[in-house]
Length: 208
Image 1 (cartoon, rainbow, N blue to C red):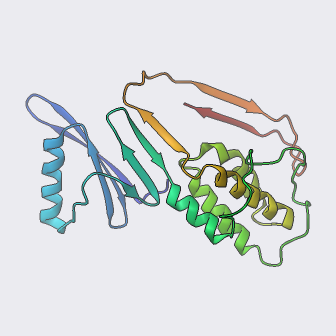
Image 2: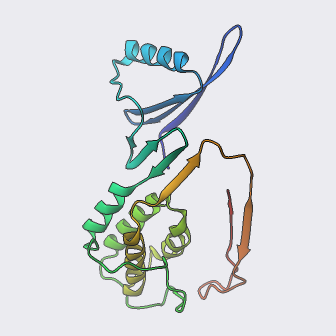
Image 3: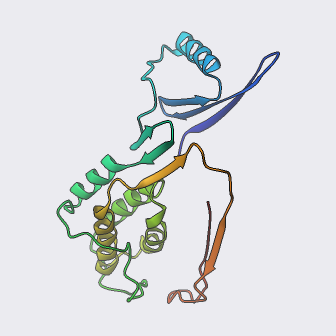
C-alpha cells in the first residue's frame, strides 16, 4: 500500500515501554499500539492540535475492510473488488478457476495494439492495488504490467480473465490468527529464460 507516511512512536514511562503506530494518508489516520491508555492520550493530543474525529475501531480504510474477533483479524477488499467488476461490466461474468491461462505465452507482439491503452492501464492500476490483500493475483498482474507501453487486445483479454478469477471469490483476503506461532517460510523460483521479449529468466520470491 502506498501511504503518505508511517510514523512509529515509542512511548516510555518509568515501568513500561509502549509502541504506537500512526499510519497517515492525506487527512486519514490509523492509530494502533499495545497500550490503550497511551493510545487515548495520543488521540487527545491530536484532537487538541488538529480537532480530529474519532471513528472508533478500524473497519474501513483506503478501500480495505477490517474484521476483528478474539481469534483473528481479517483484511480484505470486497467492496473495492465488486466496484472494480461493475466498472468493467464483469459482475455477471463466468468465474475463472485460475488468474491466468498458461497455455499461451504473452509477449509485446501478442495481438493487435489497442488504439487507446488508457483503459488497460487504468485496469492494471486498480488490479495492482488489489494485490495488497490478494497475493494470488500478484504474478498475473505483474506479468500484465510489463505491457503497459504496448498494450494489445490479447493483453486486455488476459486482464479481463483476472477479473473473472476474482469474480469467483470477491471476499478473499488476508487472515491473521491471534494464536499463530511465528514461523518464517520462504519460497523462490525462476522460469529459466522463458520471456519471449528479453530471453531473460524471471525470478520471484515470497515470504510468509
